[in-house]
Length: 421
Image (cartoon, rainbow, N blue to C red):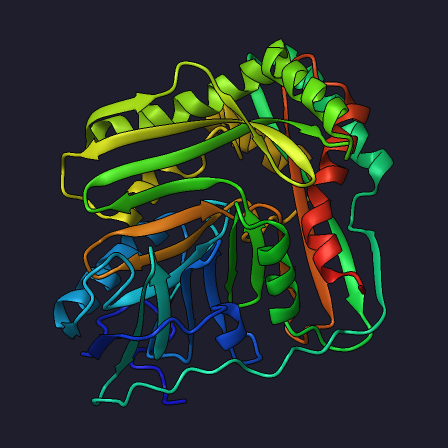
């Protein structure tokens, strides 16, 4: 691997050469990844992007992190010499990125040396560097080894303490003119041997093909929620809020789906989230459309109320600017968002890190896909532990024990992907 073109800090990036060529279908994208934390992934079904190596990277911190990341990306994009024979979103110059949930947290953009993509049957490879590089031969890597025995425990707040925090939030909602606050909790997984992150990535992608499976620098998961996609001027977002656990019995689950669709508590929570997204997109779009009523999204472990929001970009901005305006939405913060986020900081007793923050990619055209970092985990530097996260939207009539059960269901995707099979 060559040294990064730029230091791990804001500043003017150097020039890079980018070459993208069309290739035959390489098969499973995740099977192409080398071991190690530097592997990058964003996969949805058979489509997506994977990458490795470091051609350029940036770390930013603080409230201006999105603006700093945009300025850096715009400078790199303008300095890049690109030969793109494919010309689809995700080809050419592309960066993967993550941002912390908290406004004073960090953000990171990474431009891999190699990116492999597939979109609607079209497959390509992009190579990036300071000199012209040969396109690598693509082949599946050896199967990742498991991490041996895996144990799970509560994080700094146990289940009983968390239900007490939820009860406190319900009281605060009634007393402080809040409509909703999203509270998260964590579990810690410990491994007998260092975890090869490719193992849970493959399991998540297989088990949850309708979600977006991701990995950037030790942060991995499979999110069902698309914060924003910008594709040739079309802006879309999938909003999830309101959840019920599946039983595994099709007849009973159908009845539960019906009860979810009629639940005044869940419909109220969902409407807050949809409204926050639509209001954030409106200044950038000539029109914003949403379905009149939510649909029920069926996943293997839970069902969600879901609404798709779409608009036509009017101001020529890029995906990162949309991310900056959308985060945090009511789906991961609450309503009113500023007051809800303040309450989270006061009572949650959890450093979320990148949990519930934006994760995804942007290309040189400004197109991109950014999900919300849900159903996720943060891998320790030595890969011997992982922090798993789950959260629930709390409203005035929330029942703490019910919210605990919902959060348990949301831990299932990652905990199952980490457990021995």
